Image (tube, one colour):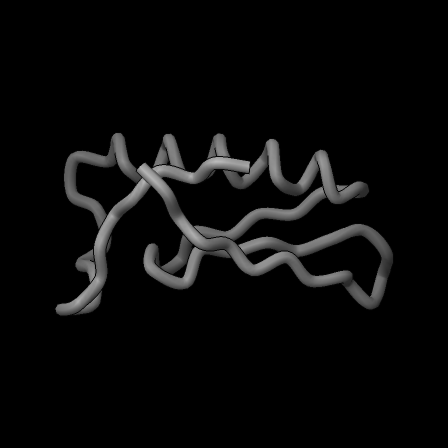
Length: 66
């Protein structure tokens, strides 16, 4: 499975990262590496939810490979 993530520097320092195809799936970290590790965990938890948030009609769930 591949997912595109958006990694942005935070104004307060560190990074914010989110998955556009998974509404509400967002995380952060002090470093780029920490933010990416945290979003992997957030994706796993998101996909394990019994009732995940509905995906946009044309969205696909694919694996994140970095």
